[in-house]
Image (cartoon, rainbow, N blue to C red; front, side):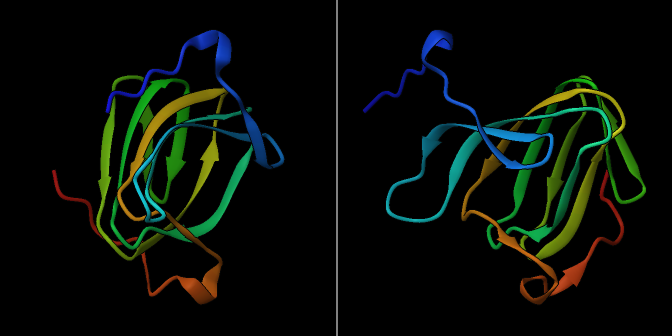
Length: 118
């Protein structure tokens, strides 16, 4: 079945100060989802990890994840179980695919960000 989400019907929900999510598609019965995320300048996404990994593509702005600063056009694959935080260095809009959702907080995070494959 196709999923179509017109711009006029997009719903945003704030999950932390300055961090909003818009769900484009839920992945069946599991916790997975495809999302748009927008963050205001200075907003912080708390420590979290993704059991199924995470794909991130930046449309606009600058997002710091660990030692990396992602800008418009940048792509990042985060391996399953790797924990990270995110900080918007400017207003940022990005696309995220979470095959198995996310878990928030240090207790849920089995590892921390390490090296990045290129």
